[in-house]
Image (cartoon, rainbow, N blue to C red; front, side, top):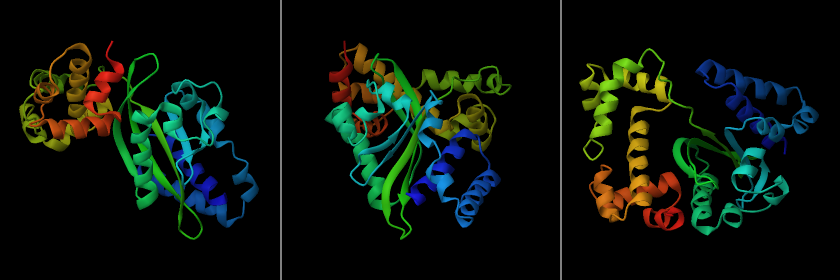
Length: 276
């Protein structure tokens, strides 16, 4: 428990201090080590971690055990899955709460972390809420390790994307590039080519896109492609193969894999679940 809480402390400070720099990250690591060295076990064990995350209405927070069952959750997660109390989630898997179609995808991601000990970092995901509104978020998951360096759980946060900062000074300089992407989503859109349209290096374009959208250029293009695919899946009866091409994918299987990775559902499952 002590190890779990110490890792939760670092995760909570990571979220609350965004955007963070490498020196800040080093500071958080050293701070956690200092707390443990000085044996502040009682303080660590009584930190209201989940309650702190309750104040973050744009962020889903959770901790799960080795079986993928919820151990800690915040109020945002409770609300978004249509429950009334945290107790309705504790001890249950995502499939038990959200159904197997959607829950299986989250569980597969959890199992990747639990089995490998590796992390999921800044994964762009599309969520459909109970009111059928679409939300884009950035998901991060980390394995929780015991003192014996064994994986004992997984914890994570999914933070909503902020609205684009169109008043940023970089917006005007990239407007032609944004318009080009919107008009050519079915084409091969390499970052190098897009940067060249604005006489920029890929790095310079990436920095400008991040300043405006909070995403890398590749993530922003992916979001645009899948927003188009979502619209055509729900608002038209076009074949999935045609939608894949319209969205910039050369074949249906590649499109289906990326769509499921981002939404948790295959294109056909998504259409069946959310079409009016």
